[in-house]
Length: 355
Image 1 (cartoon, rainbow, N blue to C red):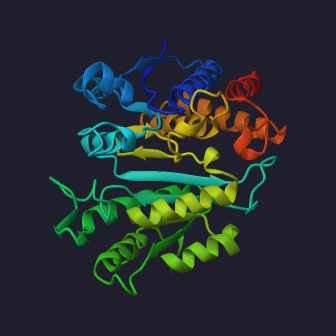
Image 2 (image 1 turned 60 degrees about the vertical axis):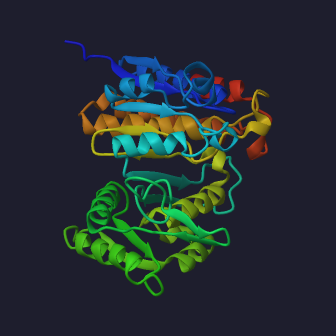
C-alpha cells in the first residue's frame, strides 16, 4: 500500500520570497521522486500580499490551514515596511508562538567550491526560541520592552527551567547524530541568574547523556573561538539572543547567509525558514540565492521524516543536500557567493544533480 501524500504548506512571503520559495518547492518535488514520496503543496496567503488580499499578513485562513499541517516553508518577510498596525509584530513571531516552535536549529558548514572564511566549520547552533530578551517572544501578552519615560527604555529577559531543559535535550540528542560534542554558551559571569539558570539546567541534562562530551563558553569568548578555531565545535546550545548572533556569525564564516539553513520546530511541527531576510533591494531581479531556503526545506523534510518514521522523506533531504553540494563544487553560485548564476539557473543545476 502506498503511503499518503505529505502535505506541505507554502508561504512565499515578501521581497525575494516569491523567487526563492518556488525554487525550494521545485527542488523538493524533484528529490521526492527518487524515494517515491508524494508531496502535496498547499499555498497560503502570507506577508504583504496577504495584507492586500486579506487585511492581515497572517490571515486566519492561513492559520487554520497550518493547524492541519505538520510541515511548511516560510518565506522571508519585510514586516518593518508594513503599514500600521501590521508592523507591530512580525508574522514569524505570530506563527512561532501559535505552534510553540521552541527550537531554532541553524547549521553552518562550509561547502567545497564556496569561498569561506572558515573552510573547516561544521557546527549546529541550537537556539532556544521562546525566551530571552526578544520582546516578541518572552511575554504571554504584550512586549518585553517598555518605556516608563520618553528617555528611558527597559527590557525584560526571561529564562525558565522548563524551556532550558527542553532545548538542552534537543541539543544533546542532535549531538548523538553528529560528533557527540556539546558546547553550552552563556554569560553567567555577568547575567548570573538568567543565563546562570540556563547553564545549570544544561549541566543537569548533560548527566543523562554520558556519551556526549560537554564544555561551556561565555558568549563573547565563543564568538572569538568560532573565528579562530571553528573546527573544535560541533553542537552549540544557547539562549535566544546569543543564538541569533552566533548563528549569523557562523553562517558568514561558512561563506554567506545565503547558504545558511534553519528550521523552527516543536516536537510535532517543523517550519523551514532561511536565516536571511527579504532583501527587497534585489527582489524581482532573479539574482537571489535560493540555497538557504532549499537547504532549510531539506532540514524540514528530514525532521518530519524522522518524527513520523517516513524514511523516504529523509532520503529526499539527503539527496537535496548532496545536490546543492555538488552544484557548489562545480562553481555554480549566485552573485552573493561571487558567481554569476541566476536564481533560476542555480535551481535548475541542483535539479539536474538530482537526476
